[in-house]
Every structure is written in structure tokens, then in C-alpha cells.
Amino acid sequence: MSRPVILCVDDERIILSSLKSQLMNNLGDTYQIELAESGEEALEILDELIKSQVEIPLVIADQIMGGMYGDEVLARIKTILPSIYGIMLTGQATAESVGEAVNKAGLFRYISKPWDEEDLVLTIKTGLRSYYDQKSLLKQECYQSILNQILKLVITAVSFEEQLSQALSIILSARCFTSLTKGSIYTVDLEQADLEWSTRVAPDMVLVSQLNEGEVPESLLEHSETDGVELITETANIRYYRAPIILQRQVVGVLFIYIDIAHDDGPQTREFLSSVGHTLAGMIRISQYNRALEKHSLELEKLVEKRTRELHQALRKQEQLNDIFLEANKKLDYFATTDELTKLMNRRCFFERADGEASRANRYGRKALLAILDVDFFKEVNDKFGHQVGDAVLAKVANVIVETIREHDFIGRIGGEEFGLLMPETSLEDGKELCERVRLAIASTKVMIGSHCISVSASMGISEVKEEESTIGCAMIRADQALYDSKHKGRNLISLN
Ligand SMILES: [Mg+2]
Image 1 (cartoon, protein in one colour):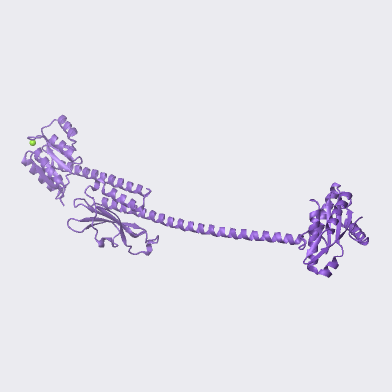
Image 2 (cartoon, protein in one colour):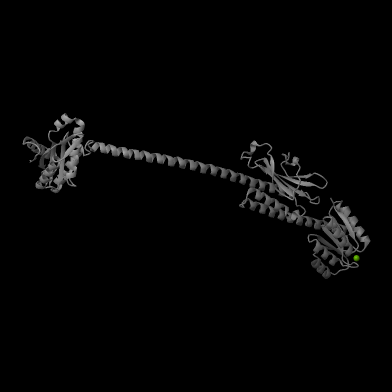
């Protein structure tokens, strides 16, 4: 690689050779010293050097020359290479014209002829130091800007692969890497890898992003002995920076950038690439977390779905059980209150309701009548035709009573062939008339069983529920006595007590 050049311009050969020997004596062979005898020649040399990508930090020019004057030469060079430092040498200028030249040509210093060697060398060394400080500062700014852009990518809502592609483009398009146009980023396969890097000794790398298709030898993908940034020369023309991407002390990826031979390999560049590696490692880490989070969310959703399904099933089962319980309760209630044969209230239910009615009548000073009805000679029906026929006769009698009584009256089977009838809000006269209708209805009913036609009659005893009575007990006894009277007097009769 070519050394940086210090360009000296003077129309006197003796001065040029003196300058060259003094510079070589004091700067060693770090710099190449190029000489030009006119401004025109200086610009030609400059053009060639730039084409060869040679760095030119400093130019020293005489002011008074045939052809182009020094200040003009320096001004033109400064236009072509803004970062160059210019020094003017002359012995024939006034302070005023030198000041003008300094401003016009952007001079770094002015040195008068004949010069003191020590002074010259000090000036040149100061200029060179400033040049390199300035260059380093610009490079640092450039690196910082790249890192900031990559950091912003970390929080950009694009896929991990897209983040890495954009990061690579940013690195390669940077001003300080003007001659770099190729690069690749490899990482371990995130689909395969889990959060436990430590279990992976040498992860297999996969290409995630590539710009301008650089060839990366397989060997460079293998885990390197050094964890730092390396400059690797493969052939005379191919050099790579290999920057490992390290996460929790494991190499989880590699960044390659192809560099030009002319690019200086300084600690600044290595530090920068190392920082890029850290940032890319952060991207990988966040991407892993995101993947893990997505996986976890999916599992959670499935679990919630499963639990919801189970809950619905349990609820449906509970509903079915409730229906069964309701049905069972209805049946229980039915069997607890209903006489199976006649479908009338059973004895317990009838007494409960009749007591309730007596209590109501007692409380509000209302009237109520109780009647007991007994089927005449029912034992004979059972004896003659059998119990099944007897049952059918009882059911028919119950039916006839139900059809004859009024809406608010109620009836229950209180014994074998004995029925109770409660008539709320009913006077003695009205009750007697109703019972008469019931008696006649029963007496005129014929029950057809097979070839038999059976007629039955019923005797009834009626009693008022008295005002002071809050249960049906006493009225029951009185009605029973009246029934006895009806039976005694010949049956198919109604008696009052
Ligand atoms: Mg001269």
C-alpha cells in the first residue's frame, strides 16, 4: 500500500531538494515526498495521486512562481481536497498580502524564506497531527452516525431479517467506507436455536443478509479462536473484516465486510465494528424474546380456549342435571300431593288446603262449607266386579264431581271411596244446591265396563266452617255425623249438620 504523500511545489530545484532532504531526515520514510516545479505540474501530480487512491495530507507551496502563483495553486488544491493542509513558503511578500493569501487559499501556516529547519519541521508536524486528528474526528462522527441508525432499527417494527439487511446497507453506504460495497451477515438459525445459547458449542451459521454477493469461505464461519474483530487477507486483493456477534459469551453470528486495500486498519475501525457486533447481538436477543413471547402467547391462547371449552361442557352438564332435578322435584311434588287413581288431591294435600281456607275465612270473617261424600255400597262393587272395576268406578265418580263443582271449589280423595269438598265463600243454601247437583250427577252416571253397566250413588254430609274455627278439624267431625245421618236414612241423600 502506498505511503501518504507530502507535495512540495517550488520553481527553484535547489529549494525543492533541500525541502525533500529535510523532510526525509525528520519524518523518516513514513511519507513519500513528491516534488513539482510549477503549479500546473503540482495539479497534474495531484490528479494522478488521487486516481491511485493515495492519501495527501499536506502540501507546501512557494508563492512567487512562473505561471500559477502559490496562493492560487493552494486554493485550487483545497477545492479538490478540502481536508488537505496547506503551507506557504515565500520571502518576498508583505504581511498584508500573506494575510490575504492565508484567507483566500485556506492556508494552515506561512513560513518565510529562508526558513529555520526546526521551525519548518515543527510546523509540518503540527499540520500533519491536525490533519489526522481532523480525519479521525470525522471518521468517529461517521461511525457514531451509523451506530445510531442501527440502534434505531432495533425498535423499528420490521422483521428481524429486514432489520439485519437494513443494518448492512447502512454500514456499507457510510461515507467513511466509500470503497466498501460488499458485506454479509450470518447468524445461527433462530428457528433452531433456543434461549439457552450456552448449550451450543459451535452454532451453525446461516446467511441472513448479503449485499453484492461476496464469497465467504466456509472456514470463516467456524468459531474463531479470537472473539474480537479480525482483518483477514485471503488473497492479494480480497480482505475481510470479520466481526463476531457475541451474545452471552457465545458467537451467535458473524458480520463480514469487504475492504479495499487502501483502507487503513486502525483501532477506531475495529472498535466501531465491535460496537456494531454488540448492537446486532441486541437485535438477535430482542428477536429471540419476541419469538419466545409469541410462542408463549400462542400456548396461552390454546390453554384459554381449552379451559373455556371445558367450562362450557361443565355448564351444559350442570344445566342438564338441573333439568333432571327440576323434573324429579315436579314428580315428587306431584306424588306427594296427588291421588294416583283419581288424579285429585290426596288426603294430606286436601287437609292442608282446606285448613288454609278455614284460616282465611276465619281471618276475614268469610263463609266456607265443607262436604264429605261417600260412594254407596262400594264394597259390593269391589266384591262383585273386582278391584279394577272398583277403581274405574271411583275415577269416574271423581271426574263427575270435578265437572260439576265451581271454579273455586276444590275436592280431594280423603279415604277409600270417600271425598272431601270445600266450597269457599258459599252460603248454606248455595252449598246445599251444589251438593244436590253433584249427588244427581253421580246417580245419573252409568259406568260401562265390558258388558256390565254399573250405576252408583253417593251420600253426603255438609257442615259450615264456623267463624271461630281456624282449622277444618271440627267441621270435619260435624260433616262426618251428617254423612252418617244420610247413610242411616237410606243413602243417596244429603244431610246438614
Ligand atoms: Mg520562487
